[in-house]
Amino acid sequence: MAVGEARLEHPAMARSARDLWTARLKGGAVGSIVSLKKRKPASQPAVTSSRGCRAVVLGIDPSLRGTGLAVIDARGPSPLLLASLTLRLSAKLSQAECLGRIAAESERLAREHGASEVAVEGTIYVQNFRTAQAMGASRGAALGAVARLGLKVTEYAPARIKQAVTGHGRASKPQVGRMVSAALGLSRELPPDEADAAAAALCHVFNAR
Image (cartoon, rainbow, N blue to C red; front, top):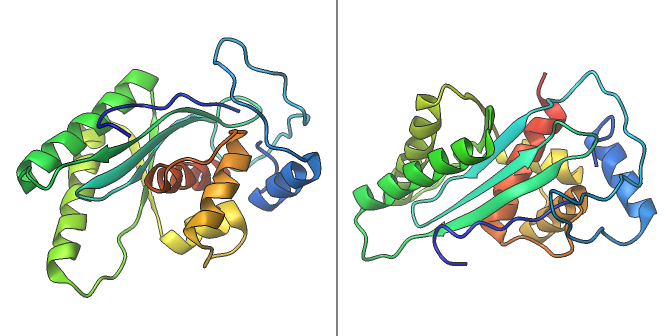
């Protein structure tokens, strides 16, 4: 996907993530893409829950050269993907230039879609110092941008995100991608970084109090 290109795709909120997946799997094929203006009626009745959040959530999967961003609207009976993108940045760009673009895209998506909350995948342990430094810097750039907007930021460990969307804390990337698509009613899977960002947002949707 080209830099800055956002994918608009659409339709599943139940009492828990496990209930959601069970309902989806029983329903058969994943729903097709629809526009925001012509959203299809939900095939499952809305379930009122005392948990989770009903807000527009920006999910962030930070990386210096390939940050994933996804915006999910959880204000209705089922979560909708409003936009997603992978920020592919050339190796020719300096670290400072990359951080500037990560900050700009994070702020743009949050403003454009009216996000009020942010979910970010927490840092993971890596042995390579330069990799850890780059990951921390990209994360800081994105969070700094949304913090300037006054958005609420929640961090989730990678294992918790996987548990929320697949029911297993050690799920593979393909498993996460498939379950994210099922939850959002997409006809095809998102690119890996975008799927991870959407998974972070869904984890927040299901677990925030």
